[in-house]
Image (cartoon, rainbow, N blue to C red; front, side, top):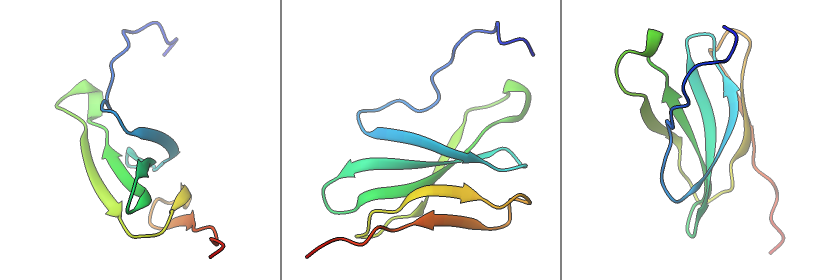
Length: 88
């Protein structure tokens, strides 16, 4: 691919989304920030093969902590992420 294709927005909406890691099977791990109660959450986006169908987003980790900097292992079976310590 030389990158001359047409742009296509796959993740719209008002929240901030930060792509972090791509698994060998095509899953994109990203972080959504800005939620008042959950701070930031980890989501996956399954990208359709060969442009068929719609991308499928799904929440992976939604807690009261600020999960961030998500990375797939090289084989795509494990997920690492950071939860910063918050001063009380």
